[in-house]
Structure formats: structure tokens, C-alpha cells
Image 1 (cartoon, rainbow, N blue to C red):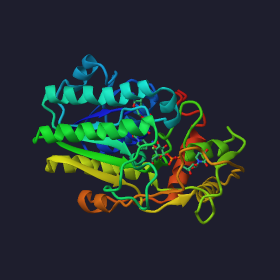
Image 2 (image 1 turned 90 degrees about the vertical axis):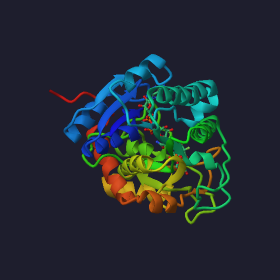
Image 3 (image 1 turned 180 degrees about the horizontal axis):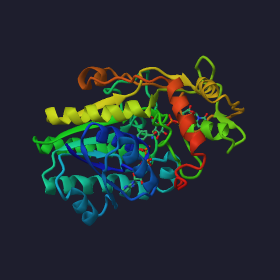
Length: 339
Ligand code: NAD
Ligand code: UFG
């Protein structure tokens, strides 16, 4: 297939591009590099041993998008978005513009180009505070911040578009907590500024960039008191996108899938797994709870297991080992390789 990948230079997009190229697809990436580096795409091509087409451009620009659709596109995988919860509370309009405005522009460009297949990155954030875990796709949707609202609105816009155009086929993938890196250690998560998520913070302590990990609360109703999340290896997540591409090739309409391992780990369990993988000590300081956090959020991924034929195969210790390989070899993130 000829696949257009928006946000393909980013964390999840770059890992997915490796697998797309390895599977023989023709890949075009459009990314404005606002949260990523072109070095990631050079390494994607090196890992896959095949080239992709890269357009540095913005999904909100009609001109940039029409360039991306030149040469024909069979399906779109739409990763491009802003994703920091705290930032979305401070700058909601920027989030509405990029995430919602960008998605509308993309759907318009798809319609103009006659492209009918879409795989969309949604998030477990749409469940907010769930009544019970694990959550399935039918659980109530309750967003708690502007970022989450953009994901929910984008899901609804895509559903409405599919309802109006029976020839369309879309898959909405609700990711739980992506972690880890490509096993080569050549690509991985490279957060700009201070990371928000747990594993990059832990990795930065292990490599010596930070003195300790701040643990946000140890008084939750969980066995060790720290928050439990469903950590999913980014290579498993990337693999799910290939399954989703197959799925949109075979079905019309709009389908939603949770993507998670189906079980959770606490903050302390993740820290212990990272210590084993890295051989480094991770000092911790217990802080008060982070506002908006829930005690436990895990996926019921059975719909994806059955209908996509996908399930997570890599465990937390592999994710820690791969994240550590990436972090150790690239302590400053993506920097040019020495000649
Ligand atoms: P990322 O920031 O690494 O990747 C997003 C990419 O989109 C970046 O390369 C960025 O430069 C690009 N981009 C942003 N705005 C753009 C624009 N206007 N035009 C073109 N490119 C633009 O993030 P990621 O972790 O790879 O996330 C990918 C997708 O998955 C996002 O939609 C995110 O909301 C979603 N998601 C991520 C997580 C997570 O924990 N990483 C969890 C759930 C959902
Ligand atoms: N945590 C710490 N210390 C840190 C960072 C996180 O103790 O420095 C804890 C959190 O309190 C939570 C757990 O580690 O218990 C996981 O936190 P993350 O920030 O890694 O992940 P979240 O589950 O809070 O959020 C992630 C994405 C969101 C997405 C959400 C939905 O970052 O964008 O999953 O599943 F909306």
C-alpha cells in the first residue's frame, strides 16, 4: 500500500514507519518536526534498509497536505498531534487548532484526493476516571482536560464523516501507555524539555540526568499504593497499526479498538523492572498525588485481540531493556551520528 503517515517522525510514528517499510509498503511522512527530529527518519530508513518520502510540512496547511498526497495514497495513518496534558490546560486554543483543525484539514484533503482509509491515534485519556478496570470500548467517555477533549472530538468527527460516506473505512486506536524503544536502540522516545511520562523520567534518572524520580502518590488503593497503568511496548503498538491497515482494507465504517497489554504495573514495579534492566539504582521521592491522575487504568484489549488479530507480545522487562539501550546510546536524544 501507499501509506501517508502524519507525525511519522515522532515517537510512535517512527517505530511504525520501520515496520511499514519492512512490510513492503511505500511510505510518505508529513511532519512539521515541532516535537521530533529528522534524524529519527534517517534512522528509520537505515533500520528498514529502504527509503521513505519525507515532507517537512504542517497538517493544517492545504498546500503542504496536497504535496503529501501527490503520487497517490491508499491509506492514511494519522499520528500528528500535540499531546502534553498540562500544556493543553495552559494553551487550549493551540491544541484545538493543531489537533482538531489539523484533523479536519486532513479529512478534507483525503476527500479531495479520493482516499477512504484512515487509522487514527486516539488515547485511553478519553475514559477519564473509569468506573471499573479493565475498561472496554463501551465504557463511558469522560475527558478531564483539553488534550483529552481534542481526542474525543476528533473521534466524533471521524465517526460523523464515516456515517456520511459509506465508502470510508476508519479505525480509532485508543492507546494505553506506550513505552520502550526499537530493540536496536537507534530510535526511541526523545521528549523535548522535561518529560511528563513515567518511563522517560525513570530513564533520565538511570542515565544521570536527574537525581531521583518523583513518585506522584503512594496512598492509592493499589497493592503498593502507587498508580497502576497498562504499559504497552511501542513495537507491539507499531505492529497494531499494520493490523489496522489490513482491517481498513477489508471493512467499511468506523471501528474503535483499545490497545493495551490487558494488565497493569505500578510505578514501583516499573522502577524495579528498569533497575534490573539497567543495573542502575533509581532513587525515589514520594510526592503528593498529581492532579487528574487515577489509581488504576488498564485496557480490556479483547476486541483488538479478536477482530484485529493483535495482542501485545512484549513484556515490561523487554520494554525497560529496550528503553535503556536507547537512552544509554543516545543520552541527549537524537543527535547526529559521528562521521
Ligand atoms: P510525538 O510528539 O512524538 O509525535 C507526534 C508528531 O506529530 C511529532 O513528530 C510532531 O512533530 C508532529 N506534529 C505535531 N503537530 C504537527 C502539525 N501541525 N503538522 C505536522 N506534524 C505535526 O507523539 P507520539 O507519542 O508519537 O504520539 C503520536 C500520537 O499518539 C499522538 O496523536 C498522540 O496524541 C497519540 N497518543 C500518544 C500517547 C503516548 O503516551 N505517547 C498515548 C496515547 C495517544
Ligand atoms: N508518575 C510518577 N512520576 C512521574 C511521572 C509519572 O509517579 O514523574 C506516575 C503517574 O502518577 C502515573 C504513572 O506514573 O501513576 C503513569 O504516568 P504517565 O504520565 O506516564 O502516564 P498517564 O497514564 O498519566 O498518561 C498517559 C499519557 C496521556 C494519556 C494517558 C491515557 O501521557 O497522554 O496516558 O492513558 F492521556
